[in-house]
Amino acid sequence: MSSTTQAMTGRSAAPANSRSRVLLASLVGTTIEFYDFYVYATAAVLVFPHLFFPTGNDTTALLASFAVFGAAMVARPLGAIYFGHLGDKRGRKLTLVGALLTMGIATFLIGLLPTYAMVGWLAPAMLVILRLAQGFALGGEWSGAALVATENAPPGKRAIFGTFPQLGAPLGFIIANGLFLIIAALLPSDDPSRPSTAFLEWGWRIPFLFSAVMVIIGLWVRLNLVESNAFEKTVETGKVQKVPLVAAFQLHWRELILGTFYMLATYVLFYLMTTFSLSYGRAATDGALTGLGYDYRTFVLMMIVGVVFFGIFTLASGPWAERWGRRRTLICVTLGIILFGLLWVPILSAGTFGVMAWLILGFTLMGMTFGPMGALLPELFPANVRYTGSGISYNVSSILGAAVAPFIAVALWSYGGGSPFWVGIYLSAMGVLTLIALLLGKETKDIDIDA
Image (spheres, helix red, strand yellow):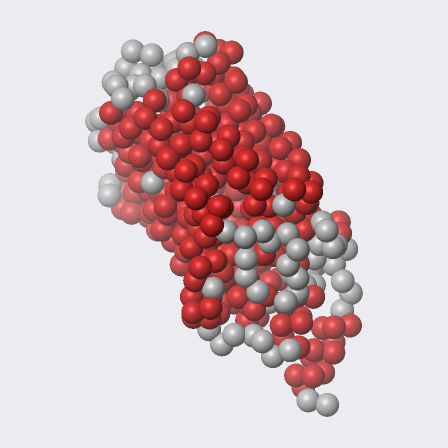
């Protein structure tokens, strides 16, 4: 018996992943990854304009901070290609461990960076490098976690299992912003539009450094995984592609395009509700860019209430996608996103009740559109290019949607004289593009995940 056959026999004899192990491994990793990303997103609004981009103009500093935030999205497709190549050739387990380590180290190092006042332009330069490393790692994280969930799911449960890596987004948001909220409460500021001196000097570093603890937990969970049957079967049948990227573009280019546009409205909504909303909610009612005028703690608590609905409807979307299909479910939700974008100004005009309704509606729609993607994107591709294909679609969409969404939103906010009207129209327009892609696509509910 050859060494390859012996190795495959050993792998085939390995114990299967239990349901609890699969769900925990897919959930804990994305929770950590999204925690790291939200920590940066919050700091991009609260801290970095003051410490890394002190231009003397608040709007310019915020845009510069958002530009670095978006730069990570450019690195994400590169990470998807790199980690996708490893995941489709060497397996899902070690690839996921590598992505998690890369993200964790980059986030921890951001917490140690000197500021512009200390080292000048080197400070934002180092921030950009570490931000790119974050994006590179996240490019390999999501698709691997989604594959762990869907490739190990029981028959008829893929969409339900696929919601668990998606649940990492609301959980990561709550942990990251909850930690920032606690620190801000312990280091209070007399100016609601600006963090306290202690917060700016050292308090903001704590959430970045805390990520090391979460990464250790995530590594322990993931190192106890075994490979999925889908990958094992790909190796056994000799279907592993020499260059998965080339095979994906040659044989599955249509799926790559459709998958990218499936995610577009999701990404735009995601970053408008998490990043732009924090800027808009905290902006003064009589400033250069008029906003809602809430203090940081009040508005973040309101956002956390909305994110609870994000989590609830992420889980609820799984059974719906199993019952009605991924495509039909997402068509209905996307129509809701288009309508929601058109109603921003009327909803926000209803005072605090309207603002709370806006947050709950936006995050509810976010859960309903994000949840089914955990199954839909992997189902578009065969097992031998699944890590690469789903990762590229997910992360190229991050450039078209998330990378530019906060920047475009601030520009449209300014163009509208402080009104969010055009920001809502932008969301609706992206929703139309996603709707067209869904109408052109096919249902994937009944495909063979091991093929």
